[in-house]
Length: 164
Image (tube, rainbow, N blue to C red; front, side, top):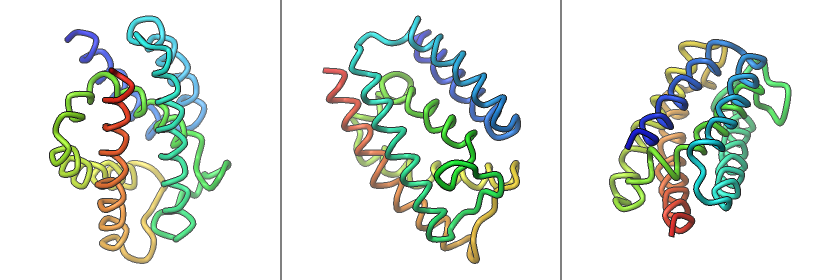
């Protein structure tokens, strides 16, 4: 239980560092967090495959949101996203086999949580950074909710499979 709490705290602190600290601080924090994660939390080396997969899907998802004008990151430097956002996806991916794994047993709850908390995270990010939603905040939030309602449960399913 202590390790799940550690995992959650590292991610939540990372969210704040990534959003408020900018890309350099995000990279430094993420590297330290990944070292801690590897040392204290990784029980199965295949977890790194899952982290890579979730990061790739997340970065692709966010790149599509940018491509379709639903969200704009003025400080984007790589594949339409700022470095801090890529770091955030890496940190988020570390939660799937630990602090969020319990959701793999409750598919509908993971759909609900994703549809609600996914868009809320983007909204908070927009409020705290120089990112902004495209023409319609409502449309952006609805598309983000729909995407998260599909992608997050798939990630949770994969985490459950990797854990076995």
